[in-house]
Length: 506
Ligand code: KIV
Ligand code: ZN
Image (cartoon, rainbow, N blue to C red; front, side, top):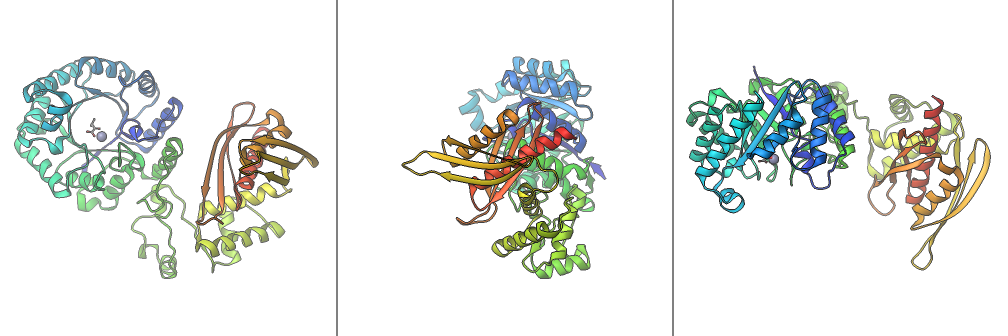
């Protein structure tokens, strides 16, 4: 079995996804998680791009052990020096320098001749090698470059000491066989190619990033560059979880393996989605909410008889609990065991209420997945007065409209005593939040607010997810669920307050 190196560029190309800015703490947390996932290399950023990029690459180099820590730089001295200054703190530093090789980029972007680009590539690799043993060189837009010129540049980079040569399909233009042939062509026409590992870096503009990467592996590539959840420029990069699970599930087909600890895939995906704010599409391979959910009766029956009937890999193999699906025909027993699975224990009226709510939702949307079950259980917990809940919601009244300002009147019981407050706001959610804040004082700070509909239509169930912090700055995630967005928001805040209180008592 050949071992394929996994080069993760979530923190560099992934962070270039429109709308995905990560702060330095989030980047460090993701880097630690990537180390746990056991990727071979973390491309931590593009140090010359900004002070923030430099600081985060340096912080990751100083703190994250295991993988190579890599910084990206153009083929110019200042970039390379800056990249080295950031990664040199790692035990395993790596410099990744690149220049475009397609005539299109040479003419319109770089305004340089082929011979100028060739000498810039050589000089860049030479300078990078003076700092680091481990230098990767990329030919940007390789798939649209003249193959002869491409091979010339690759050969020169290896001669200067590059130990990895990366072939990007920068604009995701290649078809699978075309990209595979390009890799074979390079192997046949670059004399010193055995002096370096061939790496590939595919973009997903035509939806082929993973397929192209895997075909390249079949044709001899030894490293795949990819991102968690496939995030990245435009349509993104090859998805790490898909590349890895192809290699793991079809190892004998590829004759290859990799060192990734697949049990960390799900956690990593969730973390990247949470921090970048980019949701994972429900039917996304491997990490989508539906990836292991079986809805059709025939499938459920087959699954119970033997999961192999409908599962080519197990949810456990990516570190995910089996997806429990409650359908409209599921009984009370199925709901109780699903709740137990998530650590809830209800009985009496509360359990009746939850069963009724889950079944009502199942009627509306055919099936209820784990996340929905958790949201409903949290919702009932929020309204219940059992279990030493500090704040219990009693009543919410709001008025709002196009001719009147938003106004809310909220009543809650705090440790058994009724308290109420009224407040204005820019909208009903804001007014209700302000009223609760009036009652509670500086007890909590609202850090993040997200509203989603978990069913379709105007009668959809609103699902509000919050991040709240207590006075000590410790953060908690809380949810609220209701047909009404104001009520869902108020419930989420009340849940958040109770979590802050519980956190303090613990
Ligand atoms: O897509 C691309 O070509 C890149 C290079 C910098 C490797 O991201
Ligand atoms: Zn890229």
